[in-house]
Length: 438
Picture: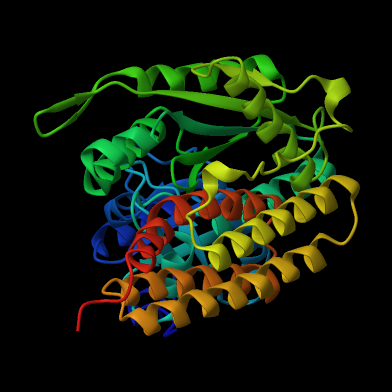
């Protein structure tokens, strides 16, 4: 990445902060701010635009403009400013919630009897294919623009580390839609995608800019609430999200009514690791679903040690009628339940995950040979689904990216049901209809 270099006019800064501020205003093409400690003393119009802020920034902690996951990176740059010009790339917390990566350079400037910090900033989001842009693509859900599983896992893990170090509490909400599948079945996936986009906008619009919402896959979402320690506070936010989703969703001439269910866990009451919190929130979610859905719930503290990830109950209803495929689907379900058991017992879940990935690759190969044998018309799209799943799971989980195994388990369980009931049933129907006409 090419670094930003301050123009010569800024090489020697005036000692008087007012004079320096005047220079910043004159340099409005460059986003610049002046800090006292870690608080904004002055920011020019370009700096306001870059961070999407219409309100005045003086008096605002600079950390409030940066995603929490990058706070340590920001602190290191401010600390090193006195040693010369230091630089980092952070995700900006824009008021319009547009994802943007910003390169910050900091250096100390004299101001009478004190030293201030000058911050030079530039947007590097669109520098494709440079690392900043690629990083955004990796961590953004392509359908909704929300954070994806990888970014959410990163932020949840960082929140637990910060919580153990600083004693700060936070809350995790797992949320999914009730009876979303009939929308896809009746109106098609294009309509379902629009519904998911509108739901994502409603969730995001109901949260503060410092709170993270991610789409975990399908109709599953997760929300990270910093500085909320008691379940009652998280419950109030979750109920606000469910209320927002209950309003009619308009798609063309359609007027759809949906509800959602939420499970809540708080740090450290329901867990002191990302895995414990995910299991607790997911257990609460499924408990609320069993009570009819459309509500919020959290796991009682005495359930913390007993909470286990939900397992797959595989039966005749999931069979597609092709013996080879049915046997392999059942084996995949069995391996996923083994992964859930490993998570619950604290044993080596990465080994169990590796077994799932290896068998999935074997199963995909078998399906692809069947498709080639009959000249299946949908083979290209079907194979692409296979490859995307393997690349996603293998790349993020097995190559050391540190994505939560609980999130991967949830994604795989959901994927298995959706893939079998959709693309695999279509393939099975063609296989059972006999060889194509000559």
